[in-house]
Image 1 (cartoon, rainbow, N blue to C red):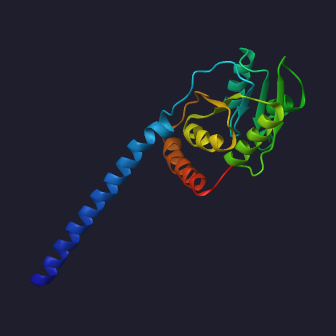
Image 2 (image 1 turned 180 degrees about the vertical axis):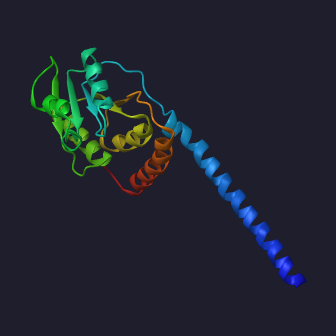
Image 3 (image 1 turned 45 degrees about the horizontal axis):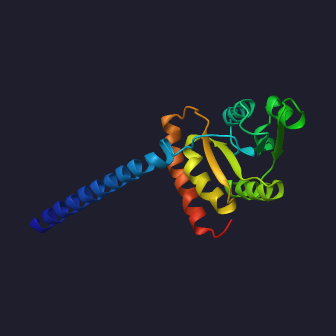
Length: 192
């Protein structure tokens, strides 16, 4: 009987230490992710050859890019993946099809439909158009990972711009996981 009690005591201690280790790992992960996903490095913006918008849900990144172009920061806005996010979004579909501004607006569908596909298109367009500097617009949790991937495909100056969209606490938790998985995948892939 005494040996069973000792076994249960050891088991409870082991479980307690395991729980403490898991909680410590989660805390370290959360703290380490703050500079990557919650307050990543953005850049001082200045005139560039183009504004490049990474695809995503909502209009925030598209309107932010248009506002930057209206301020005269670039003569062209390139929008990724608007087709997938325009279902029911008449404004965005119309923007891609009709000239409305004094600057050019170009829309494209990346291949593959990932940040890597967008970075490849940026590299291709930069070579084709002779771009030396680009403002990349996306939302806060994606900035660090996007910079890492884009730097593999484009040698010019990259200025990362935040859309300043509010991100819900539940979305932050999801983005920690999603962006970390994306970083791991990008790290394992070679080249552009």
